[in-house]
Length: 49
Length: 260
Image (cartoon, rainbow over all chains, first blue to last red; front, top):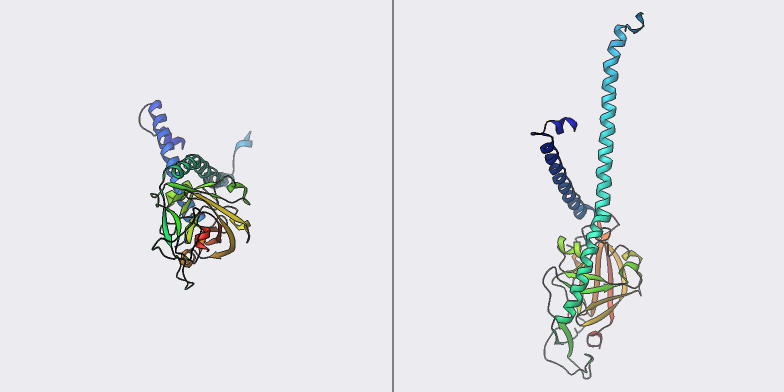
């Protein structure tokens, strides 16, 4: 993780911005993945057919 | 002194101890990350989805009340089926009724009807007095698409509107998105279910609960009289089966016309 951060391009401020953006995108993607798993496996809403 | 001099055996042990440390550390981090991902999933499913659903419910509740006030309610002739099991009865010539829709002659009789709302629109409130979470009323939207059911309970299209003759089917989440039907298994025959629509409040009485496979479409088929069928996932935290509640109309604007 530390190596990944230090290998990001640009000065420290740019590295931080990139890291934050990547984290936000990852969290949103994770949210959609959780949602997909939940609505397909855990609780589909009880529909018939 | 020579205390710090290591033997060849000790030298060979040092890297292997380092490898072991790295492996243990990797297992530890993997476990922590996996634990956090699972915890995130549980929190997202149980709390975040319910928070979103409750936000939507406030708006949908208001939308339903606005729908009651603005939608046009009409009258339609209704001939009860002759008991051939074909289901929904039929519309035809207008019979003689009093102002409550009750038959005053031999029929056919009129029932109050409303137009079908657009998909996703809130048009009804469902209340189950014996279930605390549904005592205040939960908004019902038109449609059972994934996005419809994230907002509220969903009325299956092509089944009658609540309060109408036939078999009205409403589906809802059991454990996520506000879990409106979380405690549906606690219902027993005789419990009442109220559905408020633009025509008024229709009261159904629970007759039977069943566990079926998700593909058992017969539960949605038309029925004689007026029925409400509630469907949700079963068991909790699984979509393997469906819990079905069959309830029959016992009171409401169209009751006397449907059960003359």
